[in-house]
Image (cartoon, rainbow, N blue to C red; front, side, top):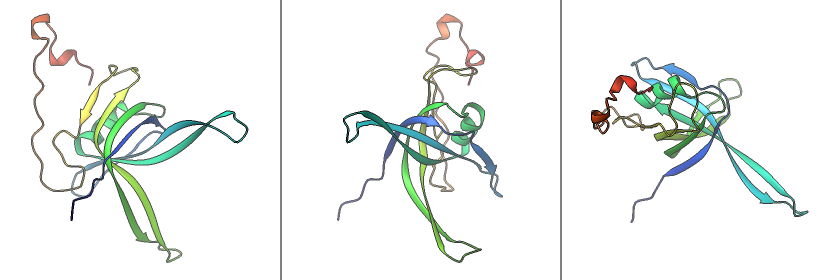
Length: 156
């Protein structure tokens, strides 16, 4: 049987400031909501926007970038995968579900104070699937070395 594909691409705006926490093991985790909008004609033929809300989760270096640069209203492009968690509610005893997008790559869009337009961050070599293995992040090349631009000049 063939393997399945679980890949998500979203472009939208952050709904509220991200929640940042650190696990007992020291892993940084960022959670936030993302709104995507789709325009379609309603029954009367008028254009109407339909907003869909998505729950996003980032880990490790990507979570640190979210902490430092993402705020309510920030436009982002993400690549990730869908995961649904379940648990038993302590009060009602009912089974609860939450579907989330685990971010593998994040691109900050729209420019703004403290970052450059089109700034991009991958998961920095860390897996967003909470695995314990990690690879070192790749080192960016010095494409602008002949122009006197150093790493200290980059705002992120």
